[in-house]
Image (cartoon, rainbow, N blue to C red; front, side, top):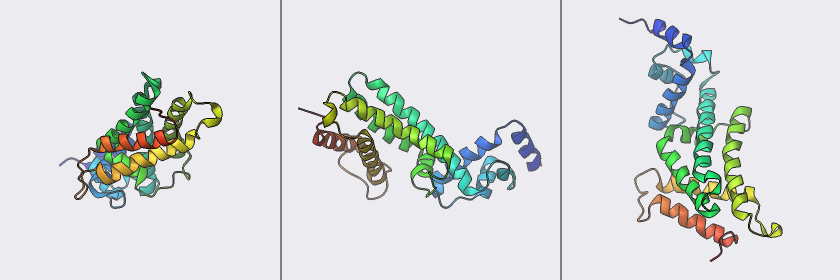
Length: 209
């Protein structure tokens, strides 16, 4: 029978243990929710001993914070690619970011739940706060590009626009983007998000017919 401690040492030696635990926790969060999983379960899923996680993480919350940090970095990259420096037009590029938001939530549910539903303190972890700020920064920059054609005194605050669009996107994910019982709608989540964003942006004068 294989010795689990030997397997543990091999994983640790090659530097893969930390990331293996992060990926294991992503799967557990997806299956059980961010409040239910334990470090022992993450260790078992990663194929290491129950003591192994403590080589890299102080506890369960520390592991969740790392999962969220990696999620925010990947999320920021996905938004940046979707915006594509505002090509071909800032409005169409801005709306593409909404689909990227929905895609990330669907493709990386464990990370998404750790980021937004785990109750961790983003402000209490400098690296996590920086990763979250990077994602928000992409939205702020996109909002600035969208408003650039307006006179400076008529531009809505870019941080406010970014926060409102973020909140709208999150709401669509929670209500209609997870395939939960009772969440079915005759309108696709992507259509709902885009129409809501257009109504909001038009109300701010950022879209003119």
